[in-house]
Image 1 (cartoon, rainbow, N blue to C red):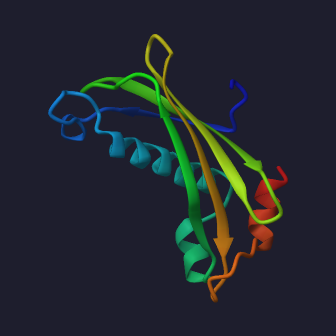
Image 2: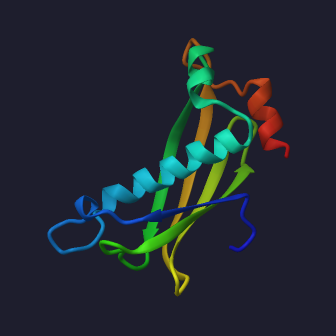
Length: 133
């Protein structure tokens, strides 16, 4: 996948690594989530403000395929593409590439929706607009 909507760069910190000296598998979820939040901001949406309006963006499924490990000090980027997959759901397709060799480290598909104040799926106008870009 090479057609991305947003990319964010990171560097692995020592404390993110496990006893084998590689990034712990759970840490990748943090990288992916931080990138999604920054992407949402870039779309003009404020995650905290949406929550105050009782619009809760939630993950309903995450699929992660680990290809290669990252190690302390590695620089990498998370590339993201947003796509509507049904009337009430959207997917973030996210890939992690190590710098400078651009080796694929991880591929993810994270499916989300928005819930209203009653906990029912409802995509508000501002989310609909973001998905139609």
